[in-house]
Image (tube, rainbow, N blue to C red; front, side, top):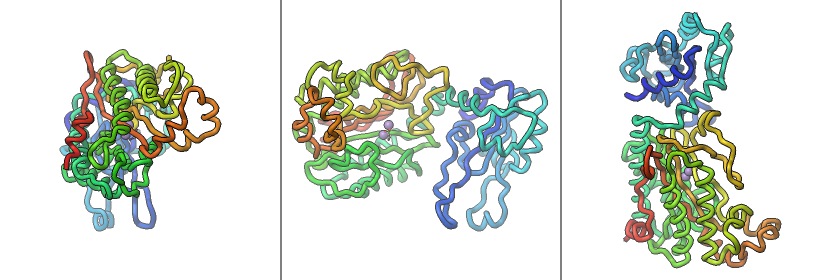
Length: 440
Ligand code: GLY
Ligand code: MN
Ligand code: MN
């Protein structure tokens, strides 16, 4: 609870000239009488830690007031869904000075308008506020929240560390208990059981559990195939702590021992990942790191005879993207693909390759490092790509790796003021350590 008041003060300092009104979320119906599992809006979690639906937050920066609004529930709600905290309980539970029912929001909003011309509100909150003489500024609120959310405070880092520690332990259990013959969803259940057992009830994103060729589907979600002896298992999974997610990927052999082909491809990805982690320091531009990862991977695939020619040409001409068609990194936090920072942080891409996340790294950024190498049927058999890259790719050799699927290794790191980053992820990734973790 402790870090939320200081986060609210930071927001009030950024937007001192208007009232600030945010909505939490409301349950989304799935079908008759059944809702999807409720997930609070990330901005609301960021500012309050409140996980209940139907809430609002009003901040009056000039008068230093903060008001949490909670739904006034009736007995029908109590009978079917149970009780929820009322204002008195909420004050101590959530550490807010003032708490009210949401039906009091219009009155208290009107009372607080004196001296303001602007209402910083998200669209749903603006709708709730109704028409007034205040001018609604949703974009400026979004920008302020994005700017703040990208640098994590020590309180937020504690949640991120716990999400990583527990998810990491679950990944180690997956390595220890996976056997050829298991179905992907059975392996998924090991991960999710371990996270829940340790106290984290929610995942940051649907688990990707991919056997063999399925590892080449970047956001694979069927999780229904059977793992065979000799295949790789790629698992990309992370739990949430107070809404803060871990995002961890490991790739390991189903039978616990790397074959020489698995070892070759895995080593290229591991080298790229370690080299990028070491370089993730303040001032570095994320797009340059991505290009560095492409360079290490292009060099590695060239040494294996899969790519041919000058490494810079393989990167800038796009041949390496046939095998590594996604970003190296994204920010991580309350959203697994977290805020990219406000407008101030957006830079032009200084590289010759397309990259979505272009920011100068700052202390407190939490980002993933997740290079990969994949053998993707759709790309390797695409006639136009084959024509374009025929001088750079040994397609016959590349196709001989199709059954390997893909390798991704993903850790979550915190950029520090000096030196290399803090790696939150402690799951084995060196070949010897992975084999030891899989020992049976
Ligand atoms: N788990 C999704 C990603 O790695 O970005
Ligand atoms: Mn990721
Ligand atoms: Mn991931």
